[in-house]
Amino acid sequence: MRLTRQTNYAIRILMYLAANPDRLSRLGEVAKAYSAPEPFMFKILQPLVSAGLVSTVRGRNGGIRLGRAADEINLREVVELTEESFTMAECFEAGADCPLIYSCELNSALRQALEAFLSTLGRYTIADLTKNKAYLHRTLGIEPAAAA
Image 1: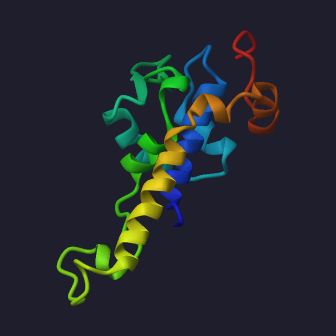
Image 2 (image 1 turned 180 degrees about the horizontal axis):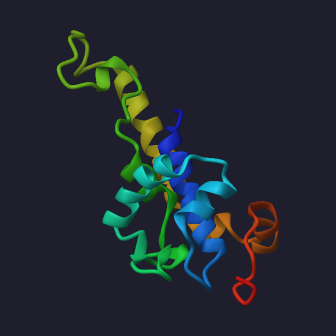
């Protein structure tokens, strides 16, 4: 299974915010850290806000931050939120015309594989991905809260 760019960047946004918990971040600085266009990142941010994974603060000194603790956001939740489809083969699609659709072992095997994939992601949180905050700060150019 291959994750979309949207899912990849959604996880990156959450990682950035988890690595920078002591202050509000601006979407522009997150986009710059990942060399991504800000309008693209804004599009990805919307479902994260709607789901409560990211919260926004409006105003001149506003910004974004995690909506929940990083250890409460698991990767499965993010993937299921941002991926449009988990179709791994034609037989996963509604209206598939294969005569074996209800008795095919390939369909069963792929469904089990997908569930194993999602189950594994469910065991990891954003906190797990951001344990080395010092490295993330250096790599992403995040300044300490006092200096910001």
